[in-house]
Image 1: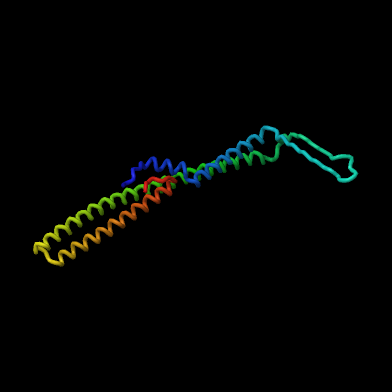
Image 2 (image 1 turned 120 degrees about the vertical axis):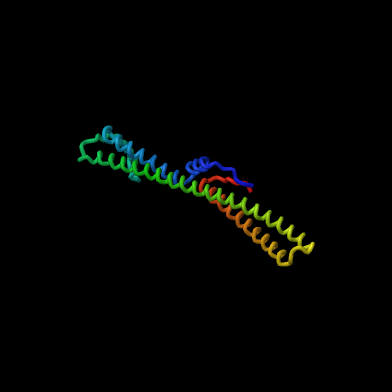
Amino acid sequence: KLVDLNLDDAINKALDRRPELKGLRAKEAGMKASLSASKQSLYFPEILGRVAYRFDGKGATGPDFIAGVGLRFPVFEGFADLSRVNEDRAKLKQARANIESLKNQITSEVKQLYLNLKTAEEALEVTRISETSAQENLELTEEEYRLGKSSAVDLAEAEALLASTNANHIEAIYNYKIAIAQLERATGEKIAEE
């Protein structure tokens, strides 16, 4: 049974499920958060907190507990904060470029594997027809041989042709299953039923 698969669906599934693309998207989200934090450090104070607990041991009057809260205000730091913002912007831009590049690679890979599958389907159909034709040829040659109209050599050639077309058909089935497996790996989803 041939696989019924739409190329656009296969590409979309691959883009949704490929772990390396998910990883780059997570990295992009981290870069966005880093850029946001860098921008905020330019204009807003940073809130700091500290908590400490100390116990001196025997004879101590009691444990010491210290807590503190503070604010750190951005002061001119020689454009270091602005430089961090620009660096984070560049990293985010690079992360987005990496995502687009990988999406293009995945799309290209899925298209090629889809074409390989369609080629394998066509080869499978051609070998099926050839096998049927060789079987009919053998049956006709056997009948002619029985009637004395063809030789043993003709019969042997017809049998060899059938064996050859059987082997070609088996190879086409194998190539078809390989093409399915490669496309399933690329899309992250089972596309063929056993």
